[in-house]
Length: 387
Ligand code: SF4
Image (tube, rainbow, N blue to C red):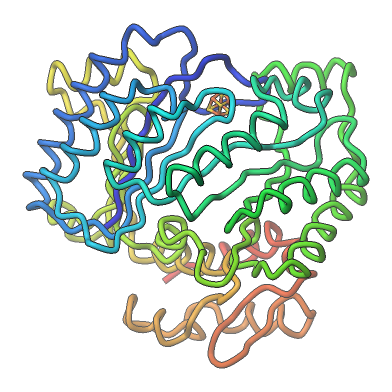
């Protein structure tokens, strides 16, 4: 099983962000930590102290937690769950909000992987995004993490930014590679409705690169990262051999996961829903709503979605097609008791004939051209998901 812990505090809201993150609420950290641990106690009891293969502390900005709070969180996680001796334990961190004391607490508590939000190196692009750090601070954070013994470092980068040129994106990629990370995530900007950045775009104050320019940036990442020994193991994720993120791979391979904290989602088998393959639940996203739910022990405030066997089959296909290894015919049959070709054979063959999918060694995966139109492919396949 996998564990995700959400820390919803940030120093300042980035201009593109619609995650559950709340600047200016640092005073609520102690009560939030208490609530997280109460939720953890309850879940560990229900699930029978499961063994965790991965733990991911995300946010928000986990590196804003006071070191003693982080230490307590990691200590309690170890007491309540059985953490596998070779577990991957990741924490996200913001280069503008990380200290040696926090890193000491993280590594002493078992964190062995750090994911830093670098995003870009140009001051004007970082300003457009509303990030609180500079490129130099990112480089200093990487050095600090290494000095604390963290050998597995991931950097998040963004392309398709307003005003961003291909040359700037190349400069960001090269700056990231110069920091010698083991893992890189490259995400195209998706302007989320309601964010300040979205309003600036709608008002015409900012302009996005066109589709062709954005595709050229993605292609640049594929070429440059491959040249530096990185393997693309998912549409947006690249790793040196042996450093693919196990936690993220678990999501795509449908490993059960438990999420703790505001907005955190869980996906677990549930005996209470005998006709479902599994059940997905989501905690309230608002900080106050989450605190209320835990203090009042009103777990019915969670959003619960039973996933039918038909939906589960489609999810296997949808998530598997994001990965480089693709969807295994054998694993599909083992998981669902029905063959992939029985469910989706005609459409898969059609997309293969169009050069959008490859069928190799009984695994189906997207071609480079297929990646560009993956959403259209999935919409077509969704129509085919009926029993
Ligand atoms: S640091 Fe991350 S979570 Fe916090 S506001 Fe920025 S994008 Fe959102």
